[in-house]
Length: 58
Length: 372
Figure: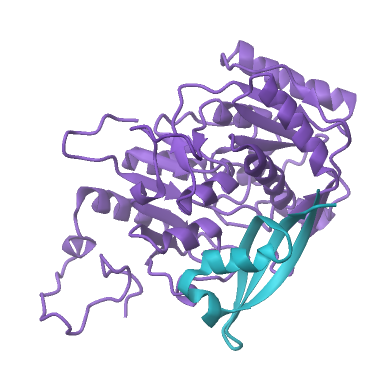
């Protein structure tokens, strides 16, 4: 197993209905989510930045 | 926890101060603990996480507080796990192989002291079979994160402790000391972001995710040279050789996680959380997003500033904004008593026909936040 730090940009409109589930689904495409948070909202582009650490099989 | 009256269920509140984001209150050495003490005295059941309760050598036993590691807190808020209060946990200690012998003895003596002086129940300890290799990182947001090079070694050590009868796991990892000197000096002055916090959370999250048992972390570091100018908010980490005592005290009473066992009457689930108190600029965490989908009253505190600017409004979260934790305490007391805050003001707005103009547009039930 290895731990990796990643960032994602998500469209706010696409995740607002159920943010937690939407973020976790996107993170799972990069590994198993370990710790994450939405750390920035860009009001102009209506995007959310997610910073996360995921685990991956090594 | 106090016994509920016959027609009264326990009022349950949760406080989250995310770690590694420079929270003005709670971003340093256990400096949210006074807040925890005050909030716990206002509610029946108080749920929070190690970052709020841990003050290195200092801690404060709070009988109605549930000490829940962040990954477990996120699962609890999502409704996946419940919390089962305990009378005691037997705690096992993982020591990173990278810790030098002198420093290892300091930690073992701290552990022995919690047995002899506090009466805690510990298993024998385990040293990891490889150095954990903690690496620190500061992200674009200013938040600190971290990774470990040998997570499997940590999990092998945890597994040995569980086989030896541990109910909870304390991890002591050797943290690098070649960190940004300016960041360290700012932290000691009660400013900036804790450079270690993000990596600490990753370590404990990994253990909780893997084993579903309580876990918390204490970093192993060489003592810093004396600096008479340090901030009181950072002083708790300057008064000893280890940060371990608070971790062992917290874990000794931390609730166990209910993941698939039949429920017991004393188990606590997310739908029982009456209120969540968070910094107003840090609303993008998993627990907050989960509880924002429920009937939990969310209280966003403005003067607990952070490096982030993720507000409830930006995420469409219905929350009551308050200026300070003192004001949040008042809201909790009123909410628990069933008193609408509007009734405590000099002017009480008149009722209007349903569908007419509202006085406020905040929390859906209380209508007192985000004042227009």
